[in-house]
Image 1 (cartoon, rainbow over the protein chains, first blue to last red):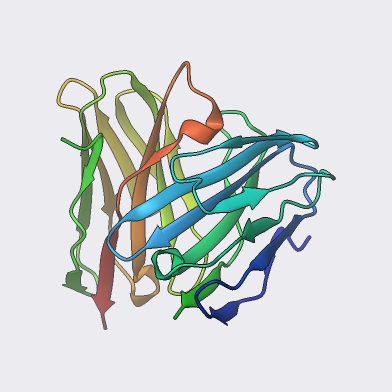
Image 2 (spheres, chains in turn brown, green):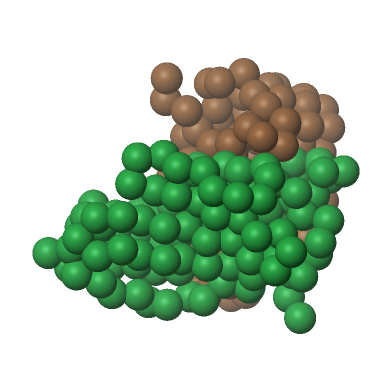
Amino acid sequence: NAGVTQTPKFRILKIGQSMTLQCTQDMNHNYMYWYRQDPGMGLKLIYYSVGAGITDKGEVPNGYNVSRSTTEDFPLRLELAAPSQTSVYFCASSTGQKNSPLHFGNGTRLTVT
Amino acid sequence: QKEVEQDPGPLSVPEGAIVSLNCTYSNSAFQYFMWYRQYSRKGPELLMYTYSSGNKEDGRFTAQVDKSSKYISLFIRDSQPSDSATYLCAMIYSGAGSYQLTFGKGTKLSVIP
């Protein structure tokens, strides 16, 4: 099993550009999440989904959008990129039970200049 | 006061040392406690999970929870260079959804051969 796969691994954007961060999982997990990790700031939840067609905002959703058309895929869309969105983005999935682990991808490093 | 406090380090120890990593929290409703390990340029992975107060042991790792003091610890015995990583504590309260997992900022550990 590949687990959670994120693409691309790295990206440099100019201010105002848009892009989509891709995330796919092969564990048939209903729950999927997008986090951003800034140095010294821990993991902040951007958006999450409890199943196909259902998404909701996390702690820091502004400037981002998501969709969940299939169980496997949970893309994150950045519109009008800003320097404040420079970060490492992690996608994760889980069964949704509190005692089940979150399975993380290896992240997308995004720089906005 | 933030809900979860974790000393970011960095912490540097010689190989074979006993390592103690700690988090404090303010919300007494937290019931489930986890430690994630994150290697450089990788996503976090679940290392230990505990529910109740007391100790839980897994090989060289021991997770300790003291709910009366709102304090959790991760001990690593006979530390190895391969233990060099960032360790994130995480916790969630019993009535919460899995998306409400709260992470500490992480402690960066280096084990020197």
